[in-house]
Every structure is written in C-alpha cells, then in structure tokens.
Image (cartoon, rainbow, N blue to C red):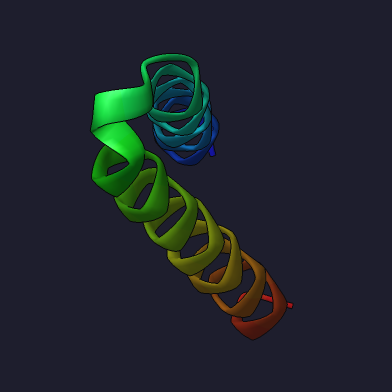
Length: 50
C-alpha cells in the first residue's frame, strides 16, 4: 500500500510540474495517465484481496 501511495504522489508531482512549465505539457499528460492507471490498478488489487 505504501508503494502505491508513493507512486501516486510521484505521478501527481510530474503532472503539476508539466503544467507549470509550459514546454512540458507532454510530461503532464504522461503523469495524469500514470496516476489514473496506478489508481485503477490499486483499486482492483485491493478489491481482489477481499
């Protein structure tokens, strides 16, 4: 669970950095996609353990 939260924080930071620096919009898009994918993966992994 700790690794999942760490990954979510990293992806969120990359997204914010990409939006702050105008030339790195591609970084923001990658960060958002990875953030969503990690969240979905964590949700399904947690629900499978129940």
